Length: 250
Image 1: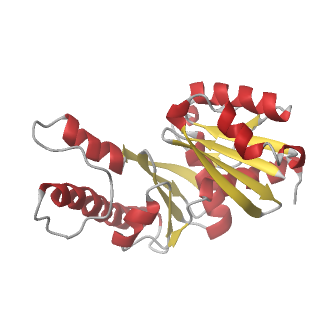
Image 2: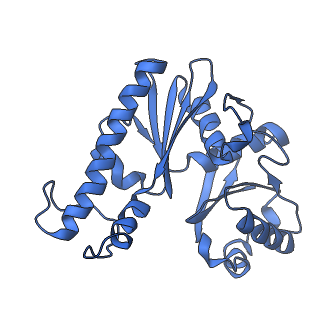
């Protein structure tokens, strides 16, 4: 089995793969920091079956802590995307090293599974748009504050707005403060997504597919009209795909 790990700013997602099949998926809050007890409880019974580990990270400190725990628990050195191998896609960023490895993994996985031209919209801690040309070149994209960050900033930067958790708004036109805030965030981001997708399609082709992923995709996709496919495990699948090319799993 392969253990794929995606270290994000909010959650660390782990996927156990056998060949192309995702057997099990787990999540650990990134802010926990003391990852070893959770790793042990998740992997202890399966550790002898895990042949290899691959990690993609946008949080260097968490990567170091988690890697140390993985080595202790599994007695194996994980492969780190961006260090031990590069994502096999042409990268047209002016400074290629500035692109988050998760974005490149999504671009590679999305273009492999769904074809090109393609737009991958990731609703995570940040909202990212990643654009892949018909010739399977990573062109770049956009980065915006995520839904939860935006909601939290309303509380932090105003005197009277309350702290609330992200959820589906009860109505389109809010009739109380909570639903006015939720409606603004959810419907606002949905409208923004649809408009940006329309503008991107004018640049790369009106037949471009749009894939949605990330922790908040299940919530926001209901309100977006231009997302063609939801794949919440796109990054983990991409890591498995990259590992298969290097380690010849399938």
